[in-house]
Length: 312
Image 1 (tube, rainbow, N blue to C red):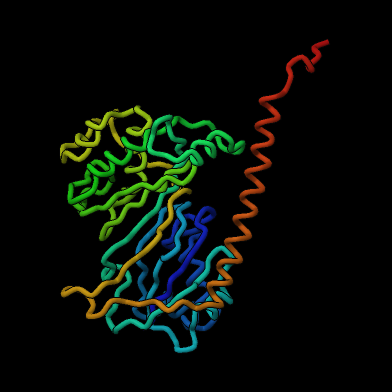
Image 2: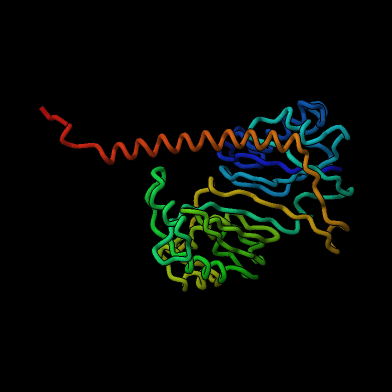
């Protein structure tokens, strides 16, 4: 068996897992395997033997380390897989794994990062560069300032083992041991959340609550109340933040008595990684150009002189 690391720009996909009639990342991966003859005839099997993925990501969510594992032919390398994948989906590393390995069940830790646009308030724990970047970025939409200290305090309360029933629509499996931190990067806060697994929409609902605490729209007591297993009343419910800033950053496979005997070590395929760097580098440049154009349009509208309008 082999496991593959897959990176993808999920903004134009309806999530990872296959769904009828809409494009998903898993469809792209399985179509590539079929095209390369790693699945067999289309009418024989839908997935390779012993196929599993590390987890589902929602529509719009991207990934660096989504992991799929299956009985793969010896010739199938990340670079070979990339030959049939669309540009926004790139394999970049692989590992030999023992028979019976399951990419979902044997994952011991999953880490997500959320890139929250959150300019710092004066006096918050932020550098002068961060404050300047927040003030000078013409492409950034107006956003309430965030107190970093309040964010860190909220994340500290959320870290540890809790019942997170108020952070998901799932009705079971809501008790988790979570580590949650934040790092400032200019006008952004990078929220990193790790756990063995996550209930549905959990990370995005954490972001919603933490941002509300950071802006002062919610008190720190709201965090304690949300951690109470007693359901929040409807008007106090925590909705999910937008999915596009969320990235599945890492999936760890460590040796455990209930899992696998040895930790999985992935070998980077240098050619495949270079392909990924080029693809996502080009998309990064394109996104910056788009942002600059939209920022210029916004500036132009703000500076437009109403007196130029002649009503006669």
